Length: 141
Image (cartoon, rainbow, N blue to C red; front, side, top):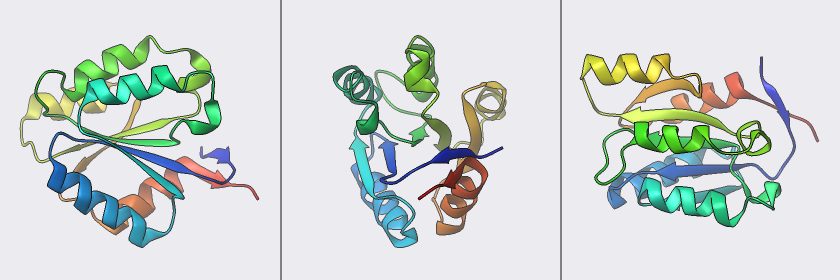
């Protein structure tokens, strides 16, 4: 069941590949569904963003598009850290994992994680963003 949200809507991209960040940002912009895009080049940067904005729920993303394979801290390690966040933060945010992996173990882990609403294959497509948006949110003006 979609969560009721009001504008402005924010999406956070977490990916170590700057080219993927730029392309995915452009794809999201084309959809016109989100008002702000927060780009993080690492899971650590994303965690720091959440910590820095914990007292400002309106600054937190409504959707996170999380890459699985990243150096230092991968997407699954991010989810482990995310699990410890306060419920008020987690209740506001949906997470979709993005990956080019064909590793069945990664696919199973993503699908089994209760915080992950969907695993999306790279490259991201506008139709994927639209589908995730419709599945996750009901905008109330």
